[in-house]
Structure formats: structure tokens, C-alpha cells
Amino acid sequence: MKRIKVIGLLFATLILLIFMCNSIITNAAEGKTFDDPQDIVENRVGLVLGTSKKLIGGLPNPYYSYRIKATIELYKADKIKFVLVSGDNGTRYYNEPNTFKKDLIAGGIPADKIFLDFAGFRTLDSMVRAKEVFGLNSVTVISQEFHNQRAIYLAEKKGLKAIGYNAKTVSGNQGLKVQLREYLARVKVFIDLLFNTQPKFFGKSIEIK
Image (cartoon, rainbow, N blue to C red):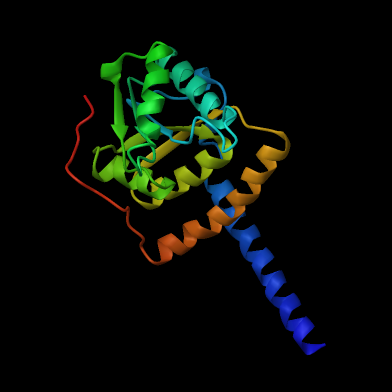
């Protein structure tokens, strides 16, 4: 019986921790994410956070296509002048930034307005590198709202002023799975901040101009 009580207490503590981390990040981003490009202030650079174009089974990834669409909307509304694509380029066969760039060009954004961050392995890496490598003081993050909220919180903890433009979210089972993972990702935010986790790579400074 005592063992069951201990397990129950640990489980309740974990649930409370998840709730607190989620609440802190959501509240910190209140009023800083936008669904309509006309409501958002202009920023010189929009930072789109990478994801794979295809799902594991080979089907199109809606998170990817919605982020492409949102980035093009924001650029054509003259709310950003440049796009920084931050994503995973972990192997020669997997290159999120280049894939994004091709589809953004196809959508009407000039190639010389697009810059690539090949070491955006995690949201933490993307936000820190935006400031330390690409020299940004402020940025508009482009992703789904839940992701934007976490990115904004990380950015501001690292000295980067950020707002978010929300790409369309995904419903159904796929959306539910991602949302559940997001709760754990938000706990990881505080672990990373506690231990001052750094990006995997920094590298030479790159000026966006």
C-alpha cells in the first residue's frame, strides 16, 4: 500500500510539473502570437522553424506545408523582408533548410531573400543561433502556435525579442500526438535553461542583408 502511495505521489507531482511548465510558457507568450498578417508588426526577418516535408509513411506533412504557406503570406504582406530557415541537416540525405528554400522560391520569395541555418537541430539551437550567429535582435517566428509559444519563451530567455506568426494547426490523431509531445518539450525547456544547454554548433557570424 505504501508503495502505491509513493507511485501515486510521484505521478501527481509529474502531472503538476507538466501543467506548470505548460502554463508558464503559454502565459509568457500571451499577446505575442498572431493569426492574421495584418495584425502583426513588421520585423526585418522571419524565422521559419524546420520540419520534414514527408511523414514516415511518405505522406505529405501538413505541418511543413502550412509553415511554407504562412511564410509566403507574411512575406507578401510586407511584414518581413528576409526569411531565415532553421532546420536539421544532420545527414547528406536529409536537408530541411534546402527543401524549405525550394518551396519558398516556388511560392514567390526571391532566393536572395532567403538565408539558411543548417544547424537548427532543436528549437533552442534555432533561437540562440538566430541571435549569436545571424546577429538578430528581434525576429518573427513562423510555426504552429504551440511551437511559436515555446520558441518565444526560449528566445526571450536568451536575449532575443520575438513574436510569432501562427501557421495553421493540424487536427485529428496526428495533431493530438504532436500536442502530447509538446507538453514534454515544454518541461525540457526548463531543464535546458537550468543547465544552460548550448546549441550543438555555433560557427562564423552570418549577416542577413
